[in-house]
Image (cartoon, rainbow, N blue to C red; front, side):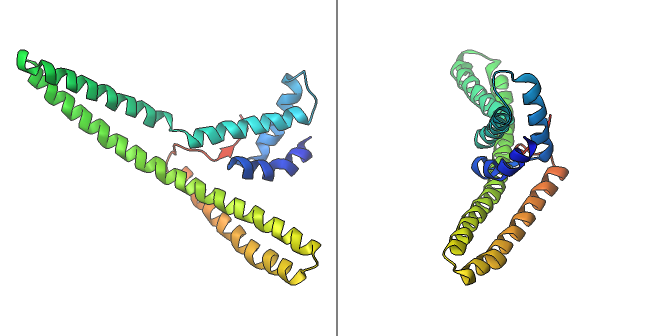
Length: 195
């Protein structure tokens, strides 16, 4: 089962745009065997890995929880500010409350802007890795086609030129992502891991 999962890993990584750790494959095989009774291995382990990768992809494509909470907070402060502004002519304490609300709103908007910029940057880095993986997959298909057509010059050019360049670029991009994850906590995670 684990060797089948390892064989399918690259397809699922490309399809979902995430990395799948080997430990996640081993864990999926063990846990699916232990807890999923109505199906058989390797199907249930494959489905488990697919579900985990799909969940991670959804987390990547949707707005992160801290940013979503901040968006709601900004909206709440905006509504409260409008309410206090309407009451200001009739209420003496409203002016002080309004200035405090405006200060809170400005701080929340500043933080919202920072998080949005950070989120967009992380998403673009992940998209770059995904584009490289998709391009490598396309080149692999071209290599196979060239080999079937006995166009060995083209196959060699793709395999030892283009594909190696893409592999090098992918390794650099993933190393940069890993270095970024190690230095600063990130909103988006790229890897399906065990646990």
